[in-house]
Image (cartoon, rainbow, N blue to C red):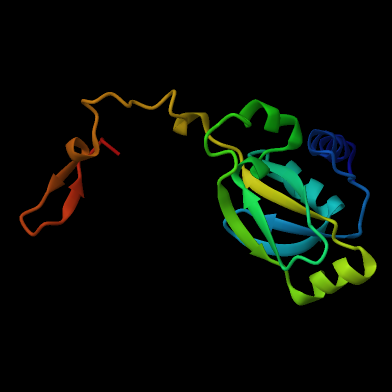
Length: 158
């Protein structure tokens, strides 16, 4: 591994509290993609390649077959206090079913204690504070209704 990528891994590992040298199996849930096994080492490498991603971690209760992922779980613990008062903080965004082998390893060998959640960081361009939400800027004004009842986007409005 080159010196530059080593420094990058250290930053990603420090930012998300990961061990970039740990090669043991972990469960990774990619938001809106699915569940897979990986290692903290591989996860750090992926996070370094894609700076627009963030990683968080929640504990998997022993004996459970599903893990509920809430909106607040998408954020690293260091950022959760900043958003805990948001109305959708505890909204469920996914119910992740754990494979049978994972459940058995969790029960019998106390493996897979945590679920690592990878999601994209929110874009400042999609933030409500930067979007035009005035009453004169509505969906109806951005679309033209065709004679057959279908809608067509107005050029330059979307």
